[in-house]
Image: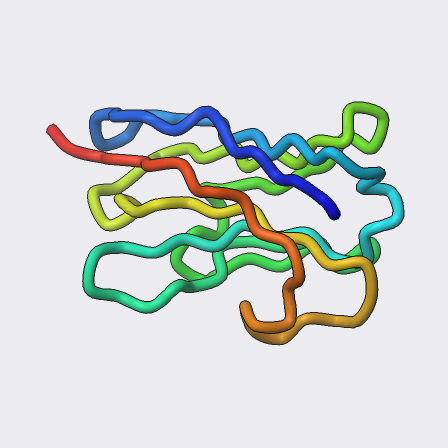
Length: 121
């Protein structure tokens, strides 16, 4: 069983930056896909960014502002978030799966508990 633990959330003013971390108990080098999702109050969980094999993808709303990366030696995935906007406010979740090419959240097997990001002046 893989455990994912997110950290790095918090409150920041518009235009600020945060870096989220997702520490995995297992070997992430074996993971076919790892991603970051977010869920705002009253909204569905949405994909923010993911790495599937060597391919990176981002939601249109965060392109050019967010960067996903992974450090296999530390079993950690990161989400660097710059130029934050109030609409980025949400709980951010890390997700992982060993095999397959996930096309929606249901196809990810492992989830963290989430970390709150609040962007407000």
